[in-house]
Image 1: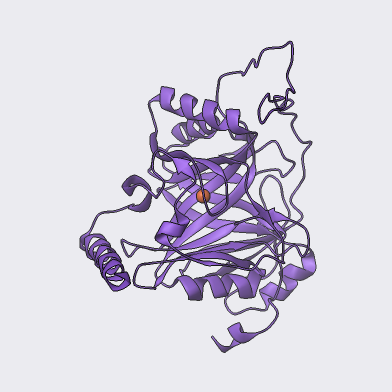
Image 2: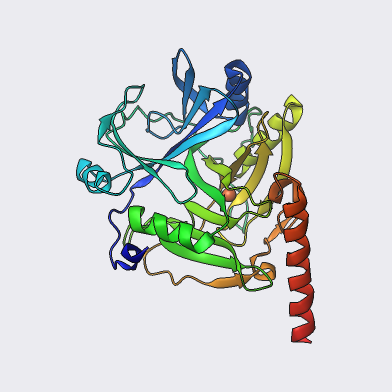
Length: 346
Ligand SMILES: [Fe+2]
């Protein structure tokens, strides 16, 4: 781990690119993709590629297979970034991506054993016009006069992939690995009542350019299993979050797990759902934007409480993926830590 003390990361990722998921039934998977508001951009014999309204060829891949997340991927700044990464231990050679969208890839393995693809040169498509935002008559402003709101019902329209969260046993070590390889910066950290790491948010390093509060985050795994905890997509606006919620609810095939609310850390108006295989997918609009000058904070659980929403802290359906002895033990440990902290504070 001594290389982690390097003062400079090996690369600075340009953006999150996609998640590569697996599902046993692609027809059911495609129905979810469409209900969720992603747009199919290509198909092969055993995979579906889906995009948002922004230009990347795809932001989501669904392969035929047992329910799992096969890999996550970052867009890199240049082919030279791939060259730098391929010299790292365990990294593959630079390969051409033999699939729709193309480009080149180097695959690495993170401390969780997860495959991380560093890609460059994916095809860009013509952006899709999602329609003009509705002018709003709020905050004393009168921007929509003489016309109705006329919000069209239906699925949300995903704009782009926003962020993902990895559940891990070692939050700090996992963050440091991603910092070293992809240059992601610390945003805010949430600690457990015991002071142990609960969640580390991290963002892209774009210098003075503003970027989402978090593009990746690392969350302590209460049930002891390391996994993709959720993947998140920006939709067009607030109405788009709301109509998407109605649409998923009316489909009666999916489970809402948290939302709608506005996060304290990140600021997004969010809505979390489980796909047919229990994987959490999020819609959001209106993220906080930060640049390199932001000084990361450390928050206790109460400080991370959402601004508003039915549950201003994670629901059990969101936080617990799997009930086991480890889950109960860790929950009791967290509750005991909270009680102890309260008593210590008097
Ligand atoms: Fe999220």
